[in-house]
Image 1 (cartoon, rainbow, N blue to C red):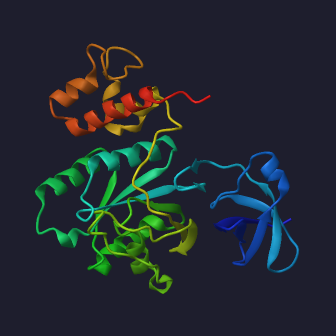
Image 2 (cartoon, rainbow, N blue to C red):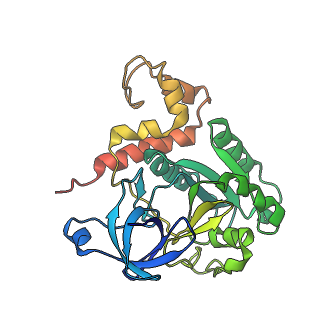
Length: 292
């Protein structure tokens, strides 16, 4: 039976792309519902084609990872789009995204959009420099400068990437520059609500530069539902680097004495806002009501 990749899921149908470029509209077999298996965009699947256009998914091949928001599987890279303004750049929201992405073993690429709205913001540039210093790739972009936006293309080659971020930060605008023929719908920020309207209604993989890119529904809140408190420290790369010098193995960097991470925060080698976010994330997880 043929194999392929689910590139779109909509209204109970799964659109499977095969190596020869053909797309077959498939339904999932009843056994998936019985076994509580939900095929996701990005899944590699085995399917049975009834004809050239329709078929049934027979099996979902093992996943290397999966995300809940957005619902997608087998992602290599997450392009986290955050605007310089409208909505205002938020380090706490960026760090939430980074922790969740790191916990899934997905490589993040930080893309700060709408730089044209800033005359010069040393504070924002300082944030960008700090994230670069701890190992993240950071691109400063503007849809007013299409050639600048195209700097992202090499990062997409032969990878499956997901574009994520708040509504209104410019995710669809970014894709429209990379592939103008898509003509994806965009909306301005709501002046009343201070945030963008949701312009993307479903998850769909699109081929760009020999890779796949997913445009996803915008969202403005993330919860650490699949994480334990002790896992969070491993999602801060600068903590991991310093932790080898902590007195206690498995140091949580909270109340332990002779903690190298806390010492680095005091010396301003680690950004204090990152440490504050870490503490608040751990407390949030600990305060989470147990699920039964």
